[in-house]
Each structure stands twice: as C-alpha cells, then as structure tokens.
Image 1 (cartoon, rainbow, N blue to C red):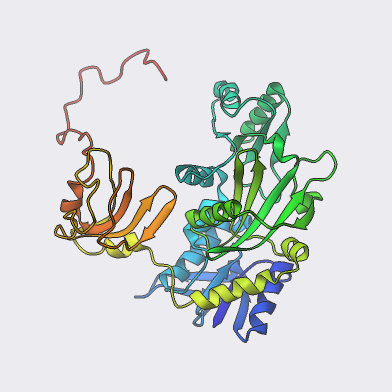
Image 2 (image 1 turned 90 degrees about the horizontal axis):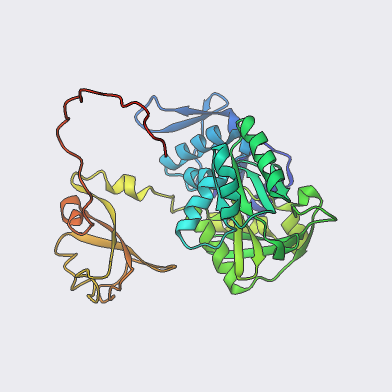
Length: 400
C-alpha cells in the first residue's frame, strides 16, 4: 500500500508513530503538509498538486487535520475522495465531529446518550436554556475548542449567565451542557478503528480541575470497557462518518454519555496507558480497506434520471407492516431496499423474506415517482405567485 498521512505536525508523536507503523509493515508512506496542496479543478478529472507539482498516485490517505486548518484540510480530503482514494475519515465526517453543535444534533437523532445540551443566542433565553439542562452547575463549551480549551464549569446561574454573555459579546458560539456530577472528574476515551474498539483508557482530573484531558494534567490508566460502552463508541464514530476516532464518554448513572467524537485522536496517551500498538492497528485497518474507497452513494445513484435515494418510514397503519420485503410490492415498483434500520440495529441488503415492522426505516434506491407514493404527503405551497398586497408591510408586527 502507498499511504499518505496529512499532517502539519510532522514531528508530532502520533504522526511519527503512524509513519513508523506503516514502514514496519512494508508499506510506502509519505507525511504531507496539509497546507502545501493545490486543488486542481482545471482538467477533465479531479486532481491534486503538492508543492506545485502533480501529486503521485496513492492507495489511501489518513487525514490528521488540525482545527486551525479545518476548511482547507477537509477540501483536500474531499478531493482525494473524488479521486477514489480511500480514507477512513471522510471530509464530511471530519466536519461533523469538529463542530460540537453539529455533532450533538446528529448523534441525538440516533439515540446516543449524551449530557443534556442547549444552544441559544439571545440573552433573554440564557436562563431558560440553563434550566433546560437541569440548572447550575453547568458546563459552558466553545463550539470548536480542543484539548479542554474553552470548557468552563459555571457553579451558579449568575456566573453561567455572565460567562455566556461575555463569550457572546466576543462573537463566540457556546453550548450549555449538564454537569454530570457522578462522573467525578473522570471520563473514558475509546479508540475506535473500523468496527471495534482497539484500546481504551480512563482519564482522571487532578486536584480541583474537572477537565480530565491529559493536556490539563489528567492522569490515564488502561480500562476494559463493558460491551455497552464499546457498542456506543463504535456507533457514535460510524454515525459521524468516521472509521478512526477517539470517542470520549462520561460514566453516567444510566450508562455511557458521549461527550465528543474526535477525528484526529492523539496516540501518545492511549499507547502509554495501554501498551498497545494502536498506530499499527490503524495502519492494518487502512491496508485492509484501501481497495474500497468511500463513495457518496446519494451522489452516484442520483445521476440516473428519474432515480434517487429516499428513506421510507414504515408507520402504524401502513400496508407495509407485517409484509415481507418480497411480498410488499417494492421490487415490482423498481425499488431496492439498501438497508433496514430497526431501532439501533442496521440490516444491510435485507433478504426478501425479512418481515417489516412498525417503526422500521428503509433506505431505498428507485424511481422517484414510485417512492413518492410511499412517503407521507406534505402540504404544498401555491404554485402561482400571488399579487403584492395593498399594505406590503404591517406595523407593530409581533415577534416570537
């Protein structure tokens, strides 16, 4: 395999460990500075230049995109994807995980346990948002903070309001999150590679510090995760669109609570704590998968005129409930079921004998006109543009 590692920190521990692991396994590997690329959109095919010269061919690319270069770095990763070069972490996955609000919104849809979270911008809404997450003390987080920077514990309502108002005054966007007292200054970092957790460690905050990050002086120790924690970590990484990720979880009274999914997890702390070759596990996984570049399925399938991808919900009262896929009539309508989502389970390419249940969600490919009849109708806006009213602007319009 010929592997490119995208990194601005050429001498960082994680970058050097990944390079060493690849060389030890007989692979060709180059560490390429993310900002030295040029994206070439002038020709018939998508291409990349590096230091002013056309980039040679690579089988896989491992992005280590720092927060300060997220936009350009993900553009480079996206160009590799368009060139059908395999990457375990897609550009969308990196963008999803980098924005804490976007990550929380995505994970909340998939029944991933997280600390109660609120996001507001209006000053008058701050007290209500704090009450929504359970009241003070609360944790205030900058949307793009890393390594514990921009994470503040506000012990009282007044302090929380003052901190949030101050940050808003400097045009900073913040999340308001419940303080999970039962975690007692501890969290768990699970390193996900592919479909499994290859290593895990527990981090403990020191002294009065509530942040357990190693960069904040936290201590680390190896931990054997319960299957519930491993399953949540893998699901969270996959939902984000990542196959290599560090998933940080709090140990809540009711089970794991996901705090963050990191697309460029540091390896030094977890390798020191577990004595495991995490870098080697990452390289081995990429080597196994390098022949299967990530494909934007919706983009590729939508090229055919009249065809596309849609999600069909099997709801109570639907004629699909209790039917097998074969007997449902979907195939006769030229609709193929790509995956069946049932609760937290995903069944890829389900067999025709699979019986559909209330609450199932089907990811389908087929003719738009046939799938449209299976999706609940939405109210349609008038097709014609109405005449401008005699009084275009009303006075004293109430806000709300």
